[in-house]
Length: 57
Image 1 (cartoon, rainbow, N blue to C red):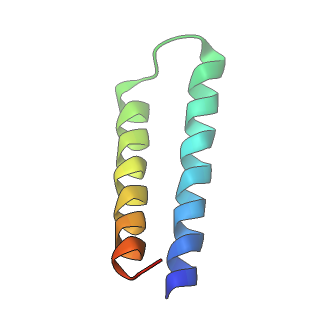
Image 2 (cartoon, rainbow, N blue to C red; image 1 turned 90 degrees about the vertical axis):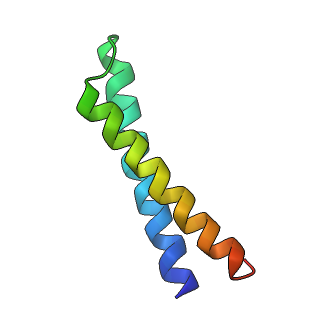
C-alpha cells in the first residue's frame, strides 16, 4: 500500500507541475479553474504525505 501511495503522490505532483508550467508559459494570471486544480492537487499530495508519515514512512 505504501508504494502505491508514493506512486499516486508522484503522479499528482507531475500533473500539478504540468499545470504550473503551462500557466507560467502564458505569462498571465492562470484561470480560477487552473488555480483551483493546482490547490486541490496540493491538498491531495499533502494528504498522501501525511498518511505515509503516520504509517512511519
